[in-house]
Figure 1 (cartoon, rainbow over the protein chains, first blue to last red):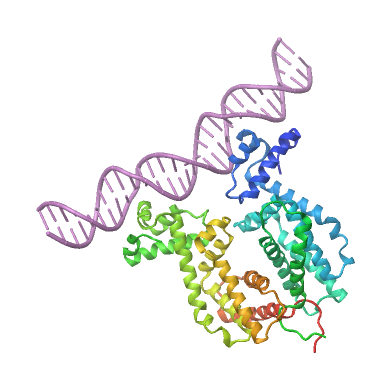
Figure 2 (figure 1 turned 135 degrees about the horizontal axis):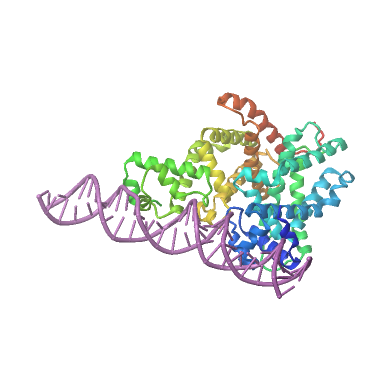
Length: 216
Length: 216
DNA sequence: ATATAATATGACTATAAGGTCATATGACTA
DNA sequence: TAGTCATATGACCTTATAGTCATATTATAT
């Protein structure tokens, strides 16, 4: 947690510091990020930084929290109405929202990715607690709902399947953005036009597998 | 490439250096790894190191090559007889061998994982060329074979599917080893006893998907 | 024994990091 | 006006790093 002094700061200054930090952690991992660069960019003295934060980790935690909150804002209302959709439509909606978030908040997304790649598992756990566990739990929850509705195979090992969905979640993001990176500005509509078919292909495979099957 | 002097070294010394490097890169990413620690562990003077290698990157490339060769040894003979197996059996065999490699060469596996996590994509590409592309290609190759044999759904987008298999490959490894980490020594047989059912579950999902399906 | 070439060495340089601290500033209070 | 207190500052500290280089050592050839 930042120190009290940080929250007493005039808003403009606080914003400068947060902006500088967001920029730094979007471009560098925790270890490669530099307080020197951050204070330079934020136009504050180094000593001042240590008046606001107890150290690098303190700031990093604060920024990661910020990303988490932003994501929650994005998915929040949706998450409270999970039971209204069929399982695979729900999944589709999740992916679509994920894509939208990434495009609208590229720096937040970059921070998240750098965080996930963090080499030190201990640091990761310290900062984000059992978040990946929580993510597994989320998928497990919607899987249970899907099973109850008869949308998915009732024989599945849900623990394993939710793990798989979590991993796939990242994989899909990677794939989609590897396949639409292009120069210049692109409208959100154009992105959807290209991405939605890919999302649907992913979901098709997830639903039906890649094996041959006798169609009815 | 190491300098000529390195290859002129007495074998014992060369081994010490390689061992120290393997150890370092298994425990630290490229950026966090330290030449100081390596020379200390290898019991050579720092100046000597720069007689053998042009720098850190030079050594790192050499070690990554080593890991690649070791893996190829493991899968080499198998890769030359791909067409003898049914697609999903082939996949199963691949996973099993992957598990075996990981258990028998934990440090090599760790080096590989640290490499994959490397933050700097440019460095990654410089060192390993288009290796991840090659991995995609490998799966695409066996997918094409699987389609020709009628083992898999002929309507699949193979590019997307091979990407998915590549990612899944890592995911499965993660899951398996998260779920068997235990204290002390365990025999390879015990590991198989636990892991093989998990592998089979993964492959079942991959083949059939997680959706409900009318059984024949 | 002498000359030559290859290799070994660790003190040294330059650079950068995170973090500290005595001091300076400026705003509010009495 | 004088005193108090929160905040601002940048020089400085320690501890790393990758990489260099003049010098010492050793092996080989004459």
